[in-house]
Image (cartoon, rainbow, N blue to C red):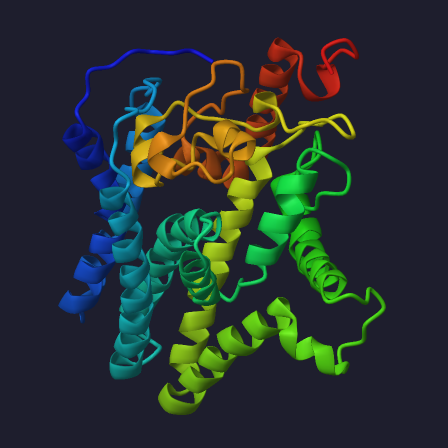
Length: 361
């Protein structure tokens, strides 16, 4: 680990982390100023384009966290972001209900809100479900429910973190695997894995779905709540708002799985060995670090899953993505061959994944 000393104040670090409000505030501004003309509506996408541009051309951030940071301001950011997620999704449903489904604002909004749900909502939920406090975990599960993916809580915490880098982990992309191939494989397998983890927790791996104990299955609880909300939107607001709500969730999940795709692509962990800092891809992008509440320092997150986002450390030895998460997602989805070629060169340079020697393992 590289230890870069710094004299940054707690206030300066906190101010940088406030960049995580860029996308949520953009979504709120878009919703409260609707309706828009077609040209004005499409112009809101420029925030997304600028975010990708900044992420791909921004400077690196390798400084280590300030040890004296107080936790409560950063926890407060999580609460506000979670509240904004619920307000934005509700506001989007209301906008589509009032304006009708066939409006350019719906097209722009479904991607703007969906991308915010992925880059802000799910990222915040990920941070929350890793906290030891039960109420924060519940809040994280509710945020995941707003994108119809609550089972991620079970699979990620009890499945992915214990199996990362192994053949048994559906959320670890294999060497050479394409983004679309990973998506087709991981989504159903993560759901099945979460189901198996829950029936095992309830004491009967052969349990059928009609078993009375199923009511205590957290995956079932999540499905009932999240799809209950979707059906309520259908009943109260009609099919258009319900479709828009589901599509924004689809966009968010697509972003999540694009991130899952490259966070461990091609990396393998020896059976029975503790998770190492070289078992996750990192990025040094300052823009990703501060807009996605520390998610870019994924190596430290897997080594110390309960460490708060503002205290995650930089590790020089972990493999590095070509860009931050915004740019890497674009590359992974739209230029996957080029992206895989870069990741392969990085693994070969660091002697990791299929290039790791038995001695190093």
